[in-house]
Every structure is written in structure tokens, then in C-alpha cells.
Image (tube, rainbow, N blue to C red; front, side):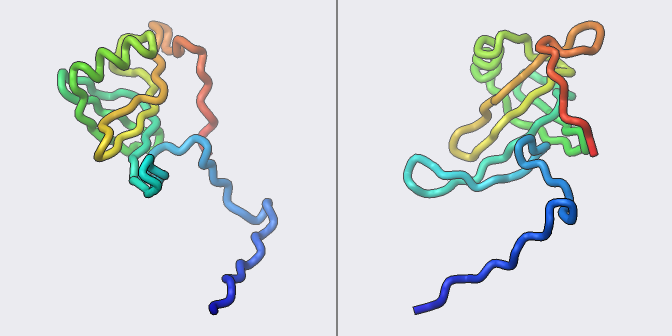
Length: 126
């Protein structure tokens, strides 16, 4: 029988670097799947910087840029579900997985004055 691992105590909050996992800019994450296993999904939050008939490019605040396939049916579903017209400059949060394709969690379109339709205020950058 092995003994349980002993974890070192965490440093005091003021000694830790601030890490925000509630609103990640981008990354790959292992999440539970429906088969009681795990799958890896890519998550990205940013701004639409290119939009083509078959793809969407998103750039995060730190400059990370990724292009995702965007079938026409997916684009139509996104626009209908979120009540927006997907355009350059939209703020978007998406999840992409090998088995599930692209899923948009939120999207907000810009107004002519540069504000966003929902008056969304992004978290301040460190």
C-alpha cells in the first residue's frame, strides 16, 4: 500500500502571481466527455480578424492568432443563435474539439462607434 501524496501548503495570496482561469485568452484543456473519459478542447477568446467563406481567424489580446474551419451551416447557426452578423471586429469566445468541430460560446458585434452591442466590458489587462 502506498501512502497518500503530501502537498506543500500554498503560499499566501499576496505571494502568488495573479492567474485568471475564469476568462482564459486561449489554451488546450482536458475536459470530461460523455463516455466517462476525457477529451481535449481548444478554447480561445478574442476578436475576429479575418472572416472567409470557409474559415474564421481569431486574435487574442496577447497576439495569439488561430484560424478555424467555418462551414456555412455553422456560420448561419452562430448568427441565428446569437442574433448577430458575424463580421470582422466581433468579440468572440469559442471552443474547438476534434470530435465536435467549432462551437461559439459568445459573440458580440461592434457598433460604428467602436463599442460592442452588449456594452460588454472586457477584464483589464495586466
